[in-house]
Image (tube, rainbow, N blue to C red; front, side, top):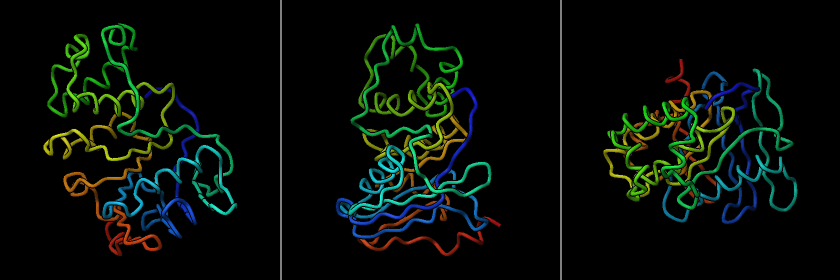
Length: 231
C-alpha cells in the first residue's frame, strides 16, 4: 500500500450480546501498553471466532454501540488512547467470500508499485508464475485465495489501519500457511492484522502473546507470558 495518513490500531474490544457471544473482552496491547500489530483469534468450531471479527467490523463501520448488542472499542492514535466513535479509519474485511478480479486487464492496469509488492509476496510464498497465471485467468482455488487477500491490502490508496481476515488458510497447503501472514504483513507493515483461524501452521508462527484462545462465549485466554516476551 502507498500513501500516508494517521495510523490507528485497536487496543481494546468489549463485545456483549452479539450473535453467539454473551460477553467477551479482548485487551489487544502488549506488556508495554502498545497495541499489537497482529492478533490471532483461535478456538473450537462454532465458538465465535468469526463473530469477534464481525463485531470489530461493525465497530469500525459504525463506531461504538451501547444498544442491546453492545460493542465498545478503544484505539490508539499518535500514542493517545481514544474511544472508537466514528467510521473515520481505513480498514478491510477479507474472507473466502471476498471478490477480486485479477485477469489480463488487471495486470495491465495495476500500478507498478502495487505489482512489485504483490510479486514480492507471491515469490515469498513460492509462487513465481503469478503474473502469467493471472494473465491467463487460470488461477487455482489456492492462488485465487491468495490474491483475494493480497490485492485489497497492496492496492489500497493509503495503508489500511486494520485488516480483518477470516480463515486465511482456506484452500492453501500447510507449507503456504506457514509463511502466509508474514508475507501479507510485509505488504503493509503499519497495518494491524486481526485474524480468525483454525490453522495450527499459522498459530505456530505467531508469538504467544498474539494468540487469543476463545474458551466459551464469556471467556478468552490471553497468555500470561505477554509481559515477559515484550520486554
